[in-house]
Structures are given as structure tokens and as C-alpha cells.
Length: 207
Image (cartoon, rainbow, N blue to C red; front, top):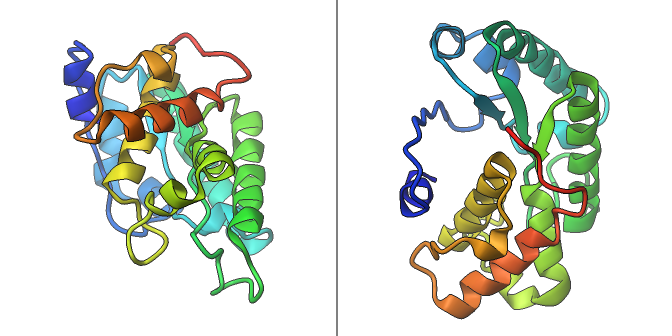
């Protein structure tokens, strides 16, 4: 993301707190996270939940909403806007929690969880998972290349797609007008930009 911002000519202060597998409720109870939100002069704070939690109706999704509620209060008090990083379904679904799960089913549940949070807290969504979905419709082979071998974490290609979706949300830019290709060949980058653009059906926000 910093490389993309620099390539697009933005002088932007960016901070990351990204411990592996952390739920939002953990961030809410981590002094480092709370202090960074409270003390920073942030325009936007982007939140990503642990990848399975919003897609598990019941106790886990309630935990997601609880963490989101507390973090929303912090951003609201600081005058920052809240954005949810709506993530992607696993390549083969979430077999740990749902025996016969598929990518499509997991993506649907993720969208339901993140949409519920965005609506409740009047937040924006960066629809990264939807961009994965759009690519799957047009190029199955390239879609599989968005993942690392574990079928959950993003490859360089997947990380690039996530970055351009988030960037286009924050800056109100058509993804197809992004100059930065993230080290990918022009054809691949163009397909990813097109997939990202198809997620912007509801228009681009102004931050």
C-alpha cells in the first residue's frame, strides 16, 4: 500500500498494526492500538477482522460486532472515518467451521457480516472480497493465483488487488486509472483493475 500511495503521488502517513489472526476485540483490548487511534490525527482508520469470524453467524459474529462497536466509538471520538476491509473467502471455503463449505458460501457469509457492521456503524466498505469474486467470474486460473499455497493468505497478486480496492475507496479513484502495477505484468494488472472497478457499482465515496 505505501508503494502504491507513493507511485500515485500522495504524501500520506500510514501506520499498520497487523498481528497474525487477531480479532477486532483483541485490538480493542490492546493499549498500543487504542493509543494509536486516540492520539493520531487520522482521516481514516481501516479495520480488518480475523478472516473467519465475520463469516460465522452466532457467537463469533457477535464477537466481531462487539469489537467493531468499541473501535467505532474510538474513531468517532477522534473524528476519524471508519472503513471495513471486507476480506475474501478461502479458496476452498472454511472447512474448519463448515464441513461442506465452498468459496462462494464463505464469501457470501463474509459479505453479510461486514455489511451488517458497515450499516450499523455508518462505515464504508472496501470490498476486496467482491473484487476476488469478480475476477473468479472472468478468469478462474488467475483467481486461484490470488492465494498463497495455503488457500487463504494472499499472494503478491492478491495483495495488489486488495491494495487497489482500498486505495480506490479512500481516494475516490477509478481503479482502471491507477498507474501503479505492483511489479505485475500489464495484462494481469489490467484484469485486476477491471475486477476492482466492477465492485464500485454504488459509486465512490469522498473522504
